Picture 1 (cartoon, rainbow, N blue to C red):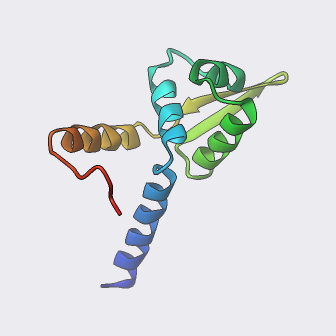
Picture 2 (picture 1 turned 180 degrees about the horizontal axis):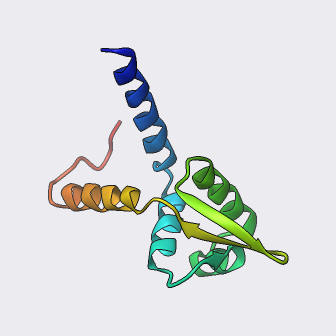
Length: 106
């Protein structure tokens, strides 16, 4: 494997690790379905998660450029930055639900 291939595999593994958290995926789906930018408290209330939990997950998603934000006064508004990742998640879910899988992976 070339160094470029190794770097690409490493980056892909990082993205999959970020997407391995169901809260982060829920936040991404929520932002995709939102008609506009959404503040943290709205995300927290709608997804019934604590605001600090949502803020932490949004920070991780932003670190990997999956979401972006802007501030308006004391409110921070988030929006989806990479809809291709959601297309990938959609494809995985569609493929996964079409097949039978073991209930316990370990």
